[in-house]
Length: 266
Image 1 (tube, rainbow, N blue to C red):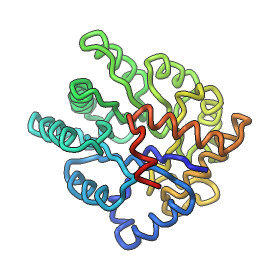
Image 2 (cartoon, helix red, strand yellow):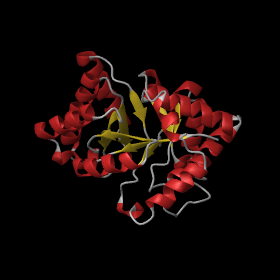
Image 3 (tube, rainbow, N blue to C red):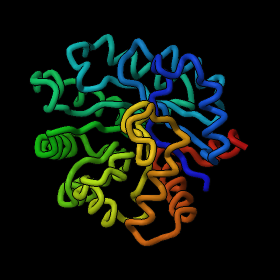
């Protein structure tokens, strides 16, 4: 099994003491690539430094919707400059809308719109966080398309319904499944995992959050993406190794990684 974990946060302090051991475990588990997603500008330099030490890691630059109060023209320029600074920067994000934890809806919309503009200008995909905001997200994306043209990317850490998944698929997005798909009561997510076309399917850990069964309650890490792969494969009635291969191919297509990731990991 050689999956690509398309969403990690290994710059978080919870990894500071044992990052080398974490790296050794994901390599032993066969993980051939990581996409590290930044959520605030204070992370950019640390993430770049980690990428210098982890050749199989690519990364994104962006502002999380729960940090939207920090959005400014200066930050937009910084994100764009960082994205241009290295071919290891493969996406804009994590960006999007989160109406579950915050009420600053217009600030979130403004920050998201600005990052969509950067992604389009630089021909990069967006990594989208969407929580309790699917209707507004679809409306905003359609408006952006009408005014500026399409932007591609991934709906990360899918937690919506199959019907919502179909809408984002119609907009051209990949759908990425995290450890949530292994949770007993996550039936809507599990049903979504069954209907996503095989060429739009991605897997992730979102570590250190959302550790999958059988590691639930522990700190999550990239090695555990295998449990996501195994559960999605089970739900779809396919072999886990084949699904790992297919989702890795999809990750390389979504983030334009071919042929860099596997050659760096080998």
